[in-house]
Image 1 (cartoon, rainbow, N blue to C red):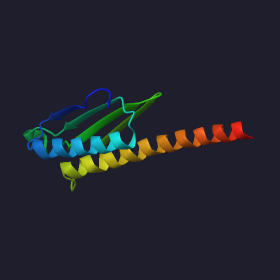
Image 2 (image 1 turned 135 degrees about the horizontal axis):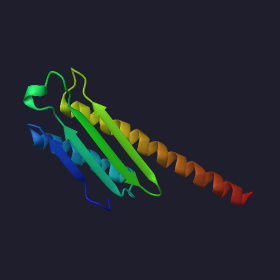
Image 3 (image 1 turned 90 degrees about the vertical axis):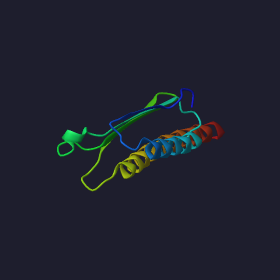
Length: 117
């Protein structure tokens, strides 16, 4: 990745497992798409007094060339813990990255076939 991971955890009680999981997921994404420019992640938990009205949420923003931006926002359901929320958000990101890579490879193959014909 050209720009180091920018991670902001707000009101997260047990940060180490979340940080480790996010780092692992970003490294996997970087292997799938070696051209990642940047990744910015915000994980926010409600303050103690707001737990009944607000839910944990995550925002993931990924940029890679030529002009691809992926933004995933997820909010936890009542049953979902923070680690599950992070895993599910990264599944969505990974699918979107893979879709863009597949489309790019398809267009390259079509152009190559046109040159042969």
